[in-house]
Image 1 (cartoon, rainbow, N blue to C red):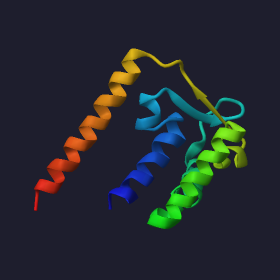
Image 2 (spheres, one colour):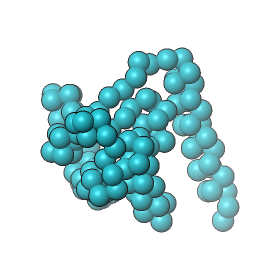
Image 3 (cartoon, rainbow, N blue to C red):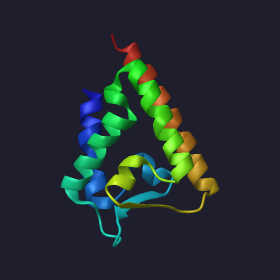
Length: 121
């Protein structure tokens, strides 16, 4: 259920603003070549490609291979295959101390949230 909600939240945020919560923390923006936002339709196509080719439908052994393949494509081509295929422009602001603190805080909040959810049985 959380995966489905996250999928649609990412589509909405990415389509309208060009970023998601995680991308915002690390200063990453995805846009069309002219710098405009993706829109909901293109954001849906991109997120579907990420789910299929990046996460391998969330199937454990399949996702191991798709994540490794995605990483290799990103390191060799300096662009993820789904961004390349849709001719998207990905930019990132320079790293900062605030960004690192926000990232660490987000990871800590996620861990605490998961522990809290696990405790509710």
